Image 1: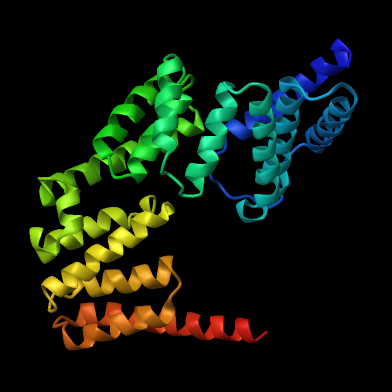
Image 2: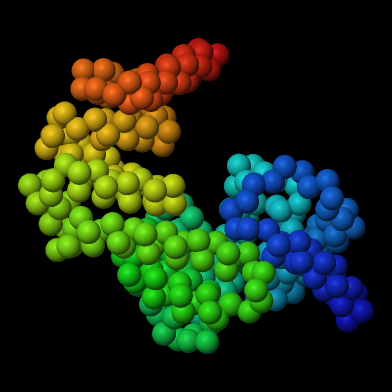
Length: 315
């Protein structure tokens, strides 16, 4: 590939990169009507050219890096987040190919770990990130990922340390990653305070035995694990629900855990019948009309969803 041709590709992809960096991580897209068709065409051509180059000359890190850039632009240009899993798999496959050539390739290692964390598979990732942070002290990406993994592991103080340090290292004030992680930092501080208040001796004791906490404490701890960001890790959903069940056992007349558990079953697990069963118990406990109304509205919602789910199964 001659220098001028390659340089033109860099210019085209630089325009696409400006679009990509302006987009928050995890944002959903339909077809992006404002996206430059020339950029999309060039991205597709780069993928084809470098795939041909690999067939002719053998695999190389550079070739796979260009293919990944093209795939990322294709994904962001045309697909909503729910329809991009096939491209994500292709991107992951290319990063694995790079690791086969260069086992210490920093970006590829980070991306592969990020793919696991994005699936909620946090176990084992922190140890991998420890090595990347130690060996690349001037890079921020692995430290950010470790902060996120620590967050999902409910080590909020550790997450705060990593995210604070890493965000200060991110170049550019408008970086989308910086915005996401600053919000994660705020949430970490909030959750850390809740845990210190309700589990001063640590979470392990309370997780192992409900006798170590009162119903209100268990309810507040459940809120930490059922936070919208925390539930991206499936293990946290189970922990949060377990806390709510323990709170109900501790004080069967405490109404809030029933509502929270019903919401978790319905909104997160889509177990609508189980959600309605839990919420129906509120009728015999709640004294305030506003609480009864909340529970009944949720039951109505999950009844409609269960009926809709049943019809779709029959089809």
